[in-house]
Amino acid sequence: MAASPSLLASMTGFARAEGALPDGTSFLWEVRSVNGRGLELRLRLPAGLDALEPALRELAAGRLRRGNVSATLTLRREERAAGAPRLIPDPAALEQALALALDLARRIPGAPPPRAEALLALPGVLRAEAPAEEDEAAREARHAALLDGFARALDGLVAARRAEGARLAAILGALLDEIAALREAAAALAAGQPEAQQARLRAQLAALLEGERRVPEDRLAAEVALLATRADVREELDRLGAHIEEARALLGAGEAVGRRLEFLVQEFVREANTLCAKSATTALTRTGLDLKAVIERLREQAANVE
Image (cartoon, rainbow, N blue to C red):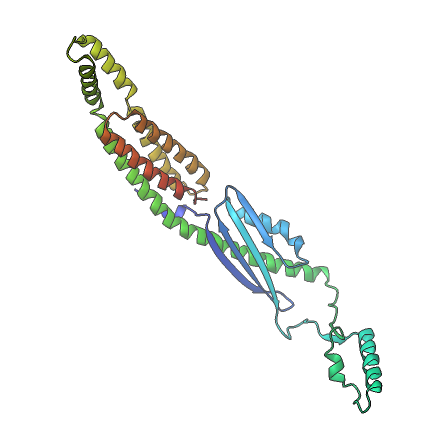
């Protein structure tokens, strides 16, 4: 009885989005997320774009609830793109290099004069032309393009997390079905606990007294009733059934239910532990241990839910 898979989201996913800025620079957003207790966003931005961080965090918080998310922005300026900086000579560096080359040529008899291409190839002689001052309109257009790209990357990440959530919902639903079946088996086995308790008590008394005297039947009945009360697991089984239904409702709730589901699984664990502690038969104990094993698998998978 699995929940609608499209309603659940995982915290694991990856997405990317590409685009171009007005000056011809191309950009690439890469966004990935893994499990986390809350929402934590780590940004890797090129120098000079720190002003975008508040808006980026606001976009992420509007689409995601939990997960450790890392987002990387890569800028690549195409060769000969519009607005690409051109190389110009550094006058001071060129004059110094020329003076040194001429002085060296005078010292070496027969040496040819320095060649222009050799001088220009020296480090520091050529430098990139300083870019023109960017006006406010150009800066806003650049930021808007980058924010739009990040929003598209987040949309892709949400889609990836929901696709993973669909697979996760099927796994969780199957585990809940398995827990429900074990609960039914435990209920059937628990029905015979009073008789098992009485038989065990009689055998223990017979071994201790070795037939010297008999315990009054009313006293024996009282002791058996006390043991039966202590070993009654009906409440644990009832609560476990309620937890199963609540978990199924959470899977179909259509919202971020990861934290609530993790807390609920802790209640599953508590009921299974109490069931094993109260068990009076090997069969019920074995069923209780199987129940604990499946609940542990449920806990591991629930940790992936947003």
